[in-house]
Length: 154
Image (tube, rainbow, N blue to C red; front, side, top):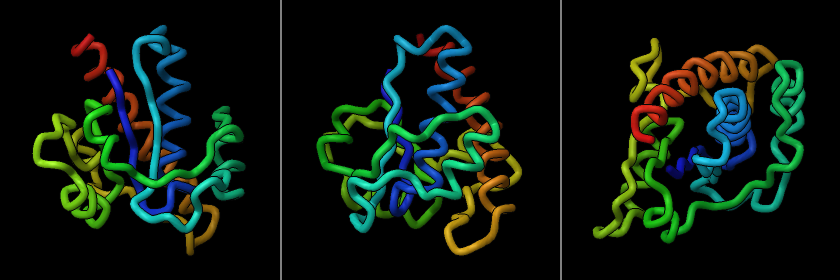
């Protein structure tokens, strides 16, 4: 199975989700069975590491995002990934516009798919430290549900 997380710049929310899911897959003994990646719909940060505040918040919880680098979503992603999970409605709309008609990838909102209290992962970029902690809280909950879905699919 192949999962792609998508946000706007690929430096806060989607790399957090990628790092958390990779960690949880290792803990569940599923790391070799699932490919995980993240991307942004925008190109402003291509090649850059996740935001320093994102890395610090993640590291405090045991997630290492230091090797991740931002990239932009490509048309080929819709043929490569089974599940493309957007962090918010705006990015989901952008993904629907980019998606080729014959693509098999399933598109959805990450939080809504797992019926959490919010539909969207709030963008913490212009806020304070609490926003990055909230992103981690939401992503951890949704990744736990995603692991259950992955186990059911494998």
